[in-house]
Image (tube, rainbow, N blue to C red; front, side, top):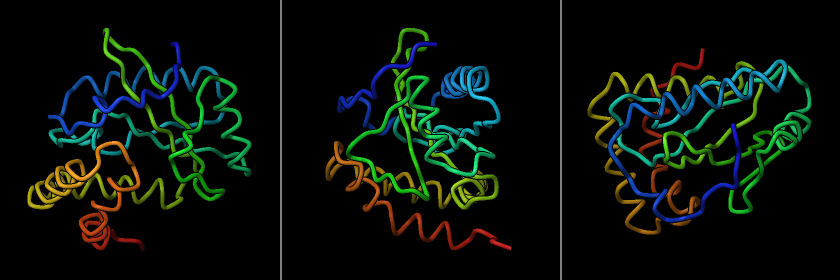
Length: 178
């Protein structure tokens, strides 16, 4: 698998219908990561992991590592071709890398959030997706928030995420954190 730079083109930021190819792209990325990074489990999260949910055609994943220092894991991802984007908030508690890949002639951006097992990035992402899968009313509300966010500034991920914030908080309030 060849990893390339994250494609910053606005055509990757449109809100589109769910496409089953997302699972295929994720499977290829997961296979590649598992072959070259020992002890990392990759889990598909985000809109592209929720069948039927509209969103950006970007593959989001959580990389679960046993490595104590998440920055060291981030550097391992960078050594195999992933990189950081300057527009993305990258903290020691939530390191991030990205890339783009070509699958069946189409380019897909891939975001990887690095964490430990049981970390909120891991557990809450799975719970969030589960709620969206079970609650069509919240799925519709979330899709509408994405449409609004995209209409304001499709190129700025911070604006996009801020505009979805209220709906995300509403969904997150339903997560059982016991």
